[in-house]
Amino acid sequence: MIIGIGSDLIDITRVGKVIERHGERFLDRIFTAAERAKAERRAKNEKMVVATYAKRFAAKEACSKALGTGIRRGVWWRDMGVVNLPGGRPTMQLTGGALARLQALTPDGFEARIDVSITDDWPLAQAFVIISAVPLAKS
Image (cartoon, rainbow, N blue to C red):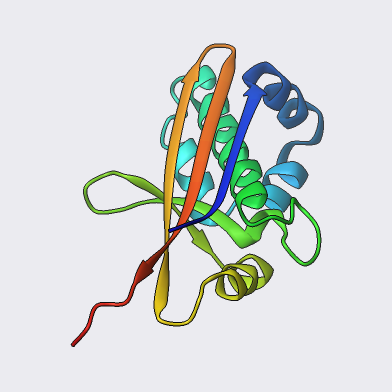
């Protein structure tokens, strides 16, 4: 069953301007170490670096909406990180207040699954997040 849906659309150039203006302070406040490493692996192409950050920013916004909190009520930017599963599919790794909120939303006897879709088409980046409650496997 679906327990939360969120989406976000962002202007990549806006993220680029924020990075230019605030640099490391912004990046450290918003992105996890894994997200920063992923973006920096694309350092040969500045547009790709900024687009990578913008997509992850949009995914965090979408996830916070799916959690029903936005970026407040104990859910902060770095509590949500985009990670890739072994096959490459993106998902969200939650910690802190975001994880606590996810656990509160997930009914007993179920586990949460977070599906993420991220894309960009310059100058826009978009993300969708669907949080589902999946019955626990019977042993």
